[in-house]
Length: 352
Ligand code: SF4
Image 1 (tube, helix red, strand yellow):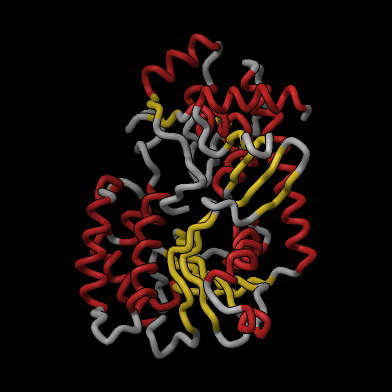
Image 2 (cartoon, rainbow, N blue to C red):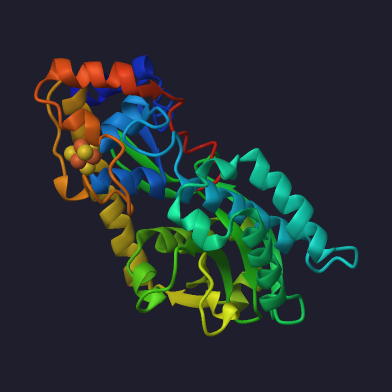
């Protein structure tokens, strides 16, 4: 990418208001603040990335996909908020587990209007709000204060806004990592992020799904950078910071033992893996920039059609646009069935 292209991209970004792509006038560089959602959307299908993160198109309710927002995302957000509250308060004498699960749980469930997904198979698998409340009580019982042999160092840790995690600084381009950790814990040997992943049910070895996932690797890299904000340096020197804990939660209840719906998986990443993660991220971002440039010139960008009917276990939200035979058809479909929503802002992440 040469200086002229960078200048053109900077102007394009300004005109489109892309929150994740800015021009740093002091450094005279294009600044990208990327997170796992942005990168994984691009890797899944560059064309979907343009529709979602450059144009901001999202399907209207009932148009091609069941809802404006997705059950998986909305349920995950509510669950993440609940566990963040849990780890903030669970060691307080005044913490009331039943109140947390029922009153707070109901409040967040309602605020996100999760009952709107009552037709979704996973809504039935979990048993609606009553089942959700039961899941929370089971969680608090399985991971009760006496069982958790660690100290909570922080909850809801968003990073990226202050560009704390540099991935690349080149002549014309700089890349930073953004994200949000649920919890940071210290078990006396390791200081590590603890993340939560909800899934329909456990099939095969649940660790397989996250062992190669770039998201957890990014968290470990980020933790190493931001840790001095949370603990004194002497403490960091005495601990290893090369792990992440993944708490996996099955939405459906296993028949043999209901408590089998929780698994805690530690994942280790070596320095070599962190280096290759950075290299992969740089390669993805450079390809992404080339494609955004192409898109800004109204040229076609690549598609990965293997995701058209399997977009994170569902039909791709842009399927109805891209099955049209010409641009006029695509435009008509967008006007009738899609709305433009605010673009994903990696510096102001509510939850990922
Ligand atoms: S429908 Fe297929 S080609 Fe179109 S954005 Fe989705 S995955 Fe990409």
